[in-house]
Image (cartoon, rainbow, N blue to C red):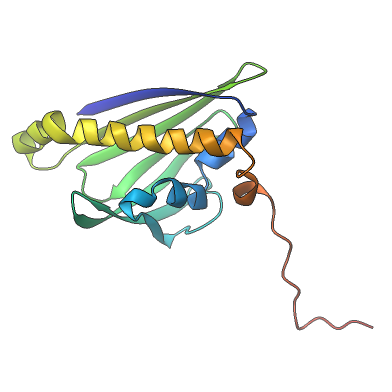
Length: 170
């Protein structure tokens, strides 16, 4: 089992950082290098408790799918997603948030097991651990840039409702 613990300090309100972290659209944009996209379950907006999302992405030159479920959520302090199906033997990602009045401390605990028994353990130690750490660090850097800038608004600002054509005015 591999455990990756990261902490990122973000100069933005906790609610903004929390919601950006569970935004499907922000995730897709922050992971563009892996051609990541949501293909089933919740495919846009904010993932909520009990929602699932199936991700499709290219890792190590191979397109893969991973389905996760949001198994806990305490807005704006924490949420946890857990793999339902995918390439890992198991995977859980806990996200925690603390605010000190000026900055939000975003902490990630990402725990996974590779399949294939002893061969998977070797892969975790030689390749997967460093690969997943780098992937999470890049995603966190992208979230930090979004939250501290003004681009966050395109992910969290409510959209105007689309007028319905079946309304009768008069």
